[in-house]
Length: 340
Ligand code: UFG
Image (cartoon, rainbow, N blue to C red):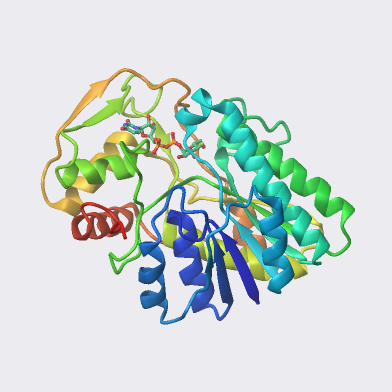
């Protein structure tokens, strides 16, 4: 298939581009590089051994999006592009709703005008909200999220479901990611957050490489085995493979839209993650316990049964693989991707 990957220069997008190319698909990337560096694409091309055309377009610009679809033919879209920082979304909700919703609407309108029949969407476990029973299952109906970022995922899932119901032939897979970590085993591409990392794994990696003094563990008084929060971490390579599996499943799907959890089904605590990272680095890392972070849930993980039975997908890499690959990327690229 000829696949348009929006946000293809981002962390999960770039790994998915590699998996798509390795599976024989032709890939075209659209990215506005607002949270990624153009140099990512050179690394992706050398790892894949393929030229990957890139359009530097902001998808909130509906006219430019339309022009892209008028000039190129796509069999499918994998939609990653969007703002994704939970804390920033609380401070700037309108920017999050404007950006994430407008870009999705431009894409859906262009897809409809040009009869593109397949869509895979980058959703999140955050759509299950605070009240869903753990492990999270896709048939839980009361989706809501405590952050504006998460709420854009809930809204976009709904918009896509309505569009699929109204458009003959359109098939949509909503992929609800748990906590993606790790990097390509080559160490050539990985997560490259701008500024102070919000997430545990890139923060740990920057402590290990000496860019940050110490990890602050956000609370150790949760009702979990060691008192720190538990999450379902999965390797970004497994996650990328999940997108390929979902894309290739769409035509066989009975319903126009279907959600799939992409997770391992196992929770790992913050302290367990810290110690796994210490094993990868080969030394102890400095940390202290601080107060809880607002909005954090104690523990959640996926029920990944649906993705296993319907997509034939399962996460295969271990926590130690995730840490070893993150460390290979971070130690080889202490400043992330080069700037120009
Ligand atoms: N944590 C620390 N110290 C840090 C960073 C994180 O102790 O410096 C802890 C957090 O409190 C949490 C765990 O590490 O318990 C994981 O935190 P992350 O920020 O890495 O991940 P979250 O589970 O909070 O966030 C993820 C995604 C979001 C999504 C959210 C809810 O990054 O996109 O899950 O599903 F919205």
